[in-house]
Image (cartoon, rainbow, N blue to C red; front, side):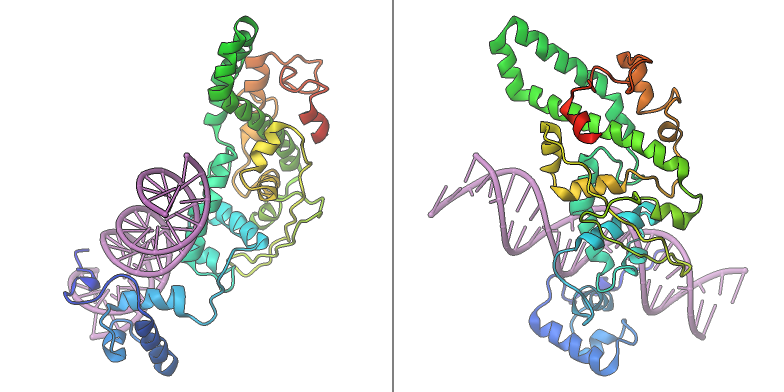
Length: 314
DNA sequence: AATGAAGGCAACCGCAGAAGG
DNA sequence: GCCTTCTGCGGTTGCCTTCAT
């Protein structure tokens, strides 16, 4: 392009806005409208570039801006829309009255994205991260090593328990939870209608409204999407669920539930087909860890019948 | 109480597309 | 059709605040 940025002009102020500047900009726009952003600063008596004025207005001074924490509903809406639209912050912002694209973007980057990663989801695709399962054998091996150490040398095992061992426990429990979500998703995707709007709606399980919320969102073409509900996942008394919940309490559970029902993306072979050898859930489980055909779950070692994790879940 | 780390947010930068001449 | 200008968007940065040690 080669066009020099408008702010290159020397002498123009940058950085945080002062209350006086805000007042000038606010009064000018309320009186005259913003018109041409290029000429606005001069007309309003501001030593700023037009771009800076526009940003200040759209992200902060606009009277219809809603400030404060994002509600649960807004959070879910962002997650849904991001799974469909990607990083189209302005498009997402149109579905959240009073929220700016910048605010949503910041919220995504500082909260939601991290949370998805912690839960083992790829924040861009909203799918379970395959590397999570790929790393599982190593984690299992570490856990086994710790157990052997415990038998041979309790002191050494204690040391390990205090270090990596604890992390392994959490990882294994997280894997269990994710695996179960995969199983649930397999069932859910089998019945999901094949339309974008319905897929968005199907991001959430239809049952359960314990503290769920219905979030009707519009599609770009003006259509109304199915309202989404966010069921409360079964509480677990295990360390794993406690550990996961500590990332965000009920929020995490809700997000998980929301991501457990499918997506607008093409059906995943590795998720929808539990017998698929490439299945990130079942193949790794059954082939690598020897789940027998008699077991209702492919990972009998990890899902014993009396596992509180399972009993809580079922 | 002091200090460093981490988190959160406002603002800037550069690019792309639309609009106008 | 081409060039220039303007606007809007998404990514990134840097400062301020909060939290942990």
